[in-house]
Length: 320
Image (cartoon, rainbow, N blue to C red; front, side):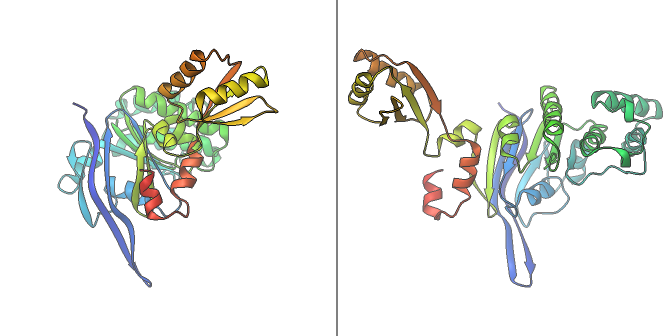
């Protein structure tokens, strides 16, 4: 049986303002297995940060229930706090302290003995490539270095579940990829990552499963490939050596959009192996030789824009 690091059912949260009640979360469900990366995507205001704040015990939900790291979110909040780490775009790093001092402070807060704290700080400085900067004030660090130090501070307590709330916002591409490497290493060692991000490429690269949040509702969930296959536009592109083979392929398959100038036939497909195998089997049966073949599927940008765009509820439901 799969052990769940996060299990939530019907989480709701709303705020009352000048314009009345604003629903931020409208009954979302979650099931995140241990040792995986779950990425929560959504436009600004969708409820991503509120979800993290609830699951990390920073605020309380109005309704619903959840278990986090094996503990009931309401009745065992202290146990939840002791099992998780939280880091994100708003760093907890004290810029007046050096990198090493920040880590030693976290070791004290986690009640580690002095020797164990210094050993842990040294290990993390090395792991996060901060040894050379250990004695410098954090105010002199680049954005990428501060993010690495922030995550290192989170790891002092040895959490098995880490909430990363938009951890690479504002970082340059090299620093972002360095952070991705750190996340992959953590997961290889059994840590569960709950990631919110604005970067679709980041979710595509890291996440085992992705949830798409819009208007406080979870409108889609699955692997990156599963989500991409829900969006129309995928196809197999076949290229032929001459017009006669292109015509023969069009007749044999009975579907597809030919391009006589490029000698290609675009056949609708979800990119699945079965469809590709069937296409090639039909062409082989009719002795039609293909020069080149490529598979094109929508990317997460297409998924995001389609499912969070100005669509009717019925259209969104049809894509579930």
